[in-house]
Length: 206
Image 1 (tube, one colour):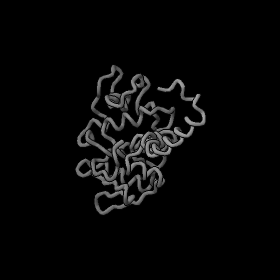
Image 2 (cartoon, rainbow, N blue to C red; image 1 turned 60 degrees about the vertical axis):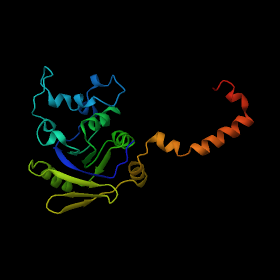
Image 3 (cartoon, one colour; image 1 turned 90 degrees about the vertical axis):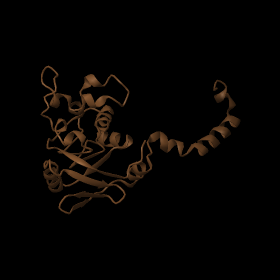
């Protein structure tokens, strides 16, 4: 997982509440376990007509938002069924940060485990950032994870809270596997001792 520190980029406005994971990426795109290519299914039903043809009317299909790295969303973003493909699809498009009043717990945890930063802010601050994002002339926002600050045009600075363990994992680029490998020495010591005391557990091990 890549280390996460600071992102400065276009913020796209998505003023919708209760955006569930099926809306983020519909079930027909869940047949793969590859993380690439999923952006074609991102917000598919919002971006296409009944025949599946792109309408070009969705915010992420318009300039400058087609290059968005930050998404400003409504309350309860990522609700619905658990699917890791949802953060994968957002990341494949280029989204690195989602800012909203609240998130569904499973989506929240899945996103951090895949290296995407989710930030919770009060609705009043979300409204201000949404207004910034809706200005196509200057929709850029900077998110500094180390300082835990969001910087927007006109001198706007919003601090944000984040669990310090999640922050550490993002800053160091540690997913669950990376965290486990940090204990590789202790795991090896344990297995060495166990192999001596209970050798029958390792008879079929290569």
